[in-house]
Image (cartoon, rainbow, N blue to C red):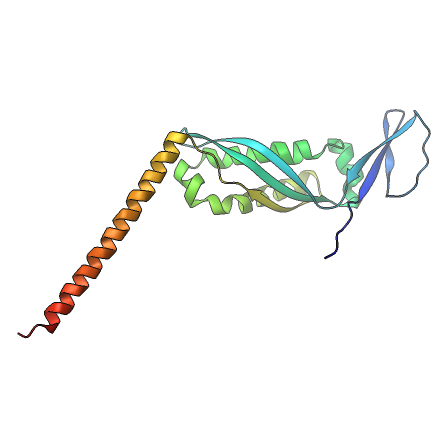
Length: 194
């Protein structure tokens, strides 16, 4: 198993102005107090967006504890992305956008859809939406994957879901028992002489 080292490119500033070049890893000379640099990671990185509120169409407020966005900035795009969005480009392009996309999704769905029916599609839909926007505003920043944790729902509603699931399970068991009993009675009728 090989481990890939993190690779950083440097964005340089001289006298407060962004220089038109970046520097790859290695030794570089700068004029002290006049030229400064800021490292920008160009290998795969994971950004964790935490505590994302999600208001459903029914008015229930739920929270996603964590959404992980795995992304990679191409070294050829460092200068343009940093020039347009600063070295902290992931704040407006990933963190803020995740909040926006989650709220857009939740506002059109009810609690049952978000928590159960469509939960398995949230990560793929979020990845697609993020990548679509990034291709327009920040080409060179790619979304590799998105991982979404199960949302936290209010305690009273969670208990209600658990009770409903328990009742549904009991109903399924009772239905199966009734089917078996009916089959058993039919077999007994078939065995009895006329």
